[in-house]
Image: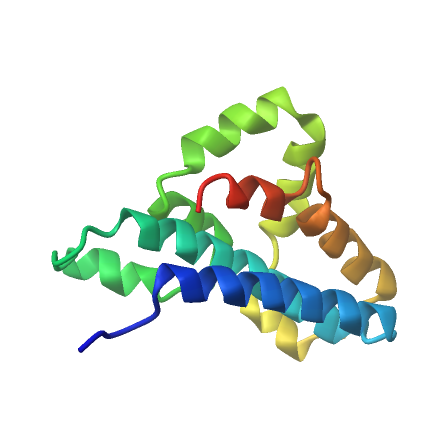
Amino acid sequence: MSYGMQRIELIAMAERKLKDAQLLFMHNRSSSAYYLAGYAVEFGLKACIAKQIAHQTIPDKDFIKDLYTHDLTKLLRLAGLERQRAIDGKADQQFEAAWAITKDWTEQSRYETKLISDAQYLLEAISDTEHGVMQWIKRHW
């Protein structure tokens, strides 16, 4: 019996959430687009974390507890990617700016009305094919 979500499922969910967010944005649903775009990054980072969990090994209790967060900065830390993000951010200022926009997303955005510009900036920061956060995450999942 398997519990939880497998890495391959997390990757698929990350990709679907980003596509859904883009579709919502194209239909002027900026608040929903913003909200779902952040979940794409969350699932992507959780896929990076899943890659590091050893097969047939029970992870530390605190690690598992911490995994159940929506905080992108904490998930980056749990994935062991803080240092790499800092290095890559220094080398690529556009990626650094994209992360600066993306890291401020929270699950509380589901209760907020977002402007078209808010959703546009977040979607661009996440989905840019050269400097975007999702492109960077894909190199680590």
